[in-house]
Image (cartoon, rainbow, N blue to C red):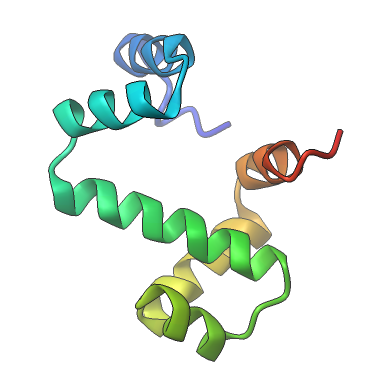
Length: 97
């Protein structure tokens, strides 16, 4: 975990996210919290990370997400050198344990 991110405001935000109970609630919450551009950017980075984890090529990812190669490179760096947050959630959304 990056200690630069950890503070009481972030903790409170994460508690709110964990309290959401459906995809519709998530849409409503993030629509209130973020601009459309901020939300779309987060969703795109997540999809890029997911596709990279499944072995997709940069070109496949560009074609399917519209992400730039610079964005793909930044996300790949997070996958390789980050806090393993993606590695925590990908098996869960894939139905693995």
